[in-house]
Image (cartoon, rainbow, N blue to C red):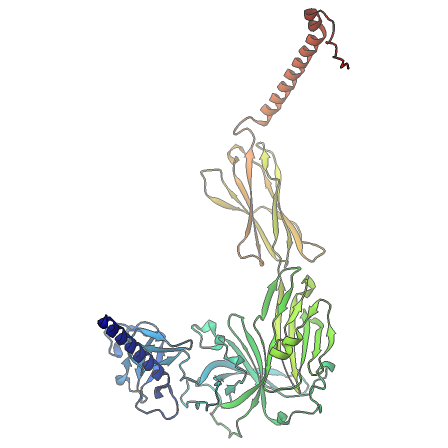
Length: 545
């Protein structure tokens, strides 16, 4: 028993040691914190190493993907050391540490801990033009460093001078963004695994100005411009590659005066974020739908919320709310907002009840602060699954008889739909062939805005077509896989009596029935009286009391 306790204590102490090493690894100076030793190795993430590259590192076997190796700060290739594996994940962050070592860790973004995330972006500038419309729009490469804002009051780590920035990046196109609300820290803005998964990013200059709409006036007590309006401003837009999250941000420049050609980052602080977790929404008719829109401000101040509808070049105001005075200036019938959520959590979502075709389009959620505003566009798409029927069913024909088979597709939306036919031979023949000589009707619109259409197929069977199947295939945007309806052709006379035989049997049965009925009458009227001494039918019994 003493030996078991000793063994358990030994395992416990070993576990404590490993945890201590892991924790020390998080605070090891190699991750780029100020005061790191020059000779301490820094860690890199190798997403893919060729066999030749792995041999150059001194490995006898190719290094697997997502391997770690350490490299001295001097960058001497001969001093590179493979960290080995297996690797352990640290908490929920993007940090990995090799088993048995606390001196090699890495960030999934290739940046030291606490620095942030680098996002490739486009700087959009409007140039030329003497009126309010520019003559052209110029796009230049830019980079956003989305800083990690610590939850404690500790000092943020300095930005390293050797960040992996594009060589073509012009001075003033590198932005270090500090977001107190941490909205921009969404994981979808991290380093993409493949190029197509990169987030979309744009940034441009921004000019604060007074709002002209009545529900966005009087947002401050004195109705004057905020003191920091004279600073330089930018507006950025970020969206994940899968369209699951987007955020529009208004930035105030916080760094001091800069010299021309200064390559250092332009430091900004986010003043207003407007975001949506559902930039695209799909729903069906008659349902309630919530258009998600949230906002975060860097200070307590008056605000206003505006929802506008746009579709094919036209639009109108849907909802307008002045948060400073708790006043609804406009509310379209069937729409609602949650005022407690607006004030307590910045939830400016719009609820639309009993959705109809008229609600399809883009909804722009705009949040106003004093002299500032940002917006999100949410696209609402209406879809209705098609209902498919095939007639006649059952399909019973005689050889050579022409019959039109109809596939009715009804109550679908949007308009585009594809209808096709295929034929499969009788049992024992598994081949299926596409039929190309069908005909289509035009689209017919229902009162609720959905559509109907029909497809027609002419069938002239032979004896060999018995038990052949005809299938109508319907493809539509509302369904992932086509809807299929099948009818089986039965040719009369192939199995069992033919149609002529059936008619003949019916006539024979009718004649036999008539003969039997006549014999029964003769028996009751003539024969019965002779046999039983009475004429005619037997007298009915009369009930007596």
